[in-house]
Image (cartoon, rainbow over all chains, first blue to last red):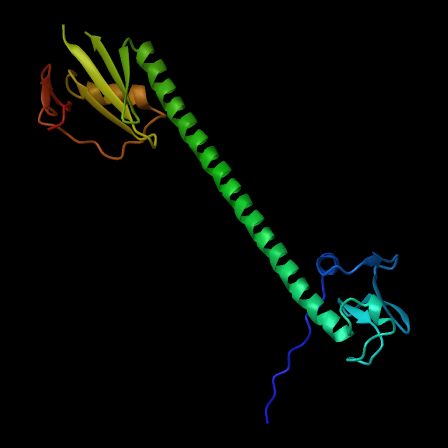
Length: 163
Length: 66
């Protein structure tokens, strides 16, 4: 017999965890040590998320499927149900955050490219202006009459003099 | 009186094309060198049928494209 085991969603990011708690309508309080106290109560008091090995773990009594101390106060009845619902909300919140970051990154990249293109365009124009200015100065210094035209993005300088 | 004429085209990339006419012998190249020094590194120079026009007894280069 083989088996597939899925772990619970690890609540790594506190801000996402808080958002997920909010989303499922669970009241919470962030304590001074950084742990997150929920409004869920069991025989040991308020169930609290504490940071253990890089993830937030709900400290609670160990009987998984029983209703906890004050069932009426615990909106999602058992802790297992609560964690399951919270996991879904956490995953949704995390995905939304990542999507938003991705969009922001794309926007920033777009903006960076726009600035880069603008810089190149300015350099190009400045170079052409410099070319033209140099030629005009020398042409005038050498007695040429200059006519200037712009044709299809190109600059045409017609220098003429009689000898 | 002969007219010396140089048409200089600067394209969108800043590349320069210069065509001269009315010059005698190699003076066209010398003139372009004066006008375009620092602005142009010639990629190619195309000689023309008037390129070898006599100038006061000398055989010299001249201008005009074919």
